[in-house]
Amino acid sequence: MRQSAKDILTLYRAKGLRIATAESCTGGMLAAAITDIAGSSDVFDRGFVTYSNAAKSDMLGVSAQTLATHGAVSEPVAREMAEGALAASAADVALSITGIAGPGGSDFKPEGRVCFGLARKGHATRTETVEFGALGRDRVRSAATDHALSLLLTAAQQA
Image (cartoon, rainbow, N blue to C red; front, side, top):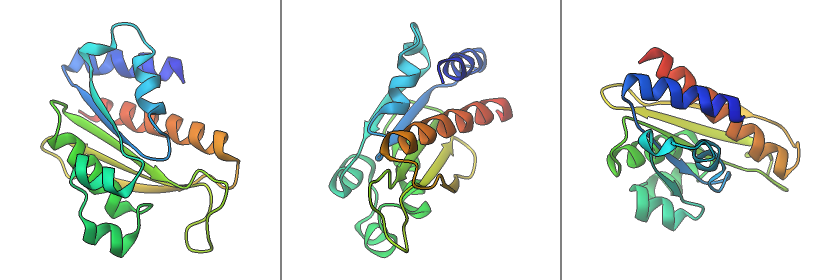
């Protein structure tokens, strides 16, 4: 994971881009992975840990209607989280993560389901859902963080 974060920082720095994160199930692990690298402050603008639905609404502007209709673990919420982080920051790219790390889940939203949102200034927001499976809480959170890092790397390569 550290090597990916270093690659991300190098690429974003070269392109003059800044990053914001909006995290739920990972609780700040993505922001930590990026800021573990010395000198990351010129690329990493800020991170939002919005674990509760109230925090998603208060800090990122996720609508109560979206939460009620789709639930916190959904691509529409991931989209609004990413767009909210982009709007509330000085970043060029914002990545959101919301999911069910476990234990638990349901038939409709199983453990290991994680939704991601990627918002970039001047581009349409992209979302995706990854089914990591019931790997256990720590492994789901780690896998989600690694996947988010790969999304950030790809976004910079396409910028």
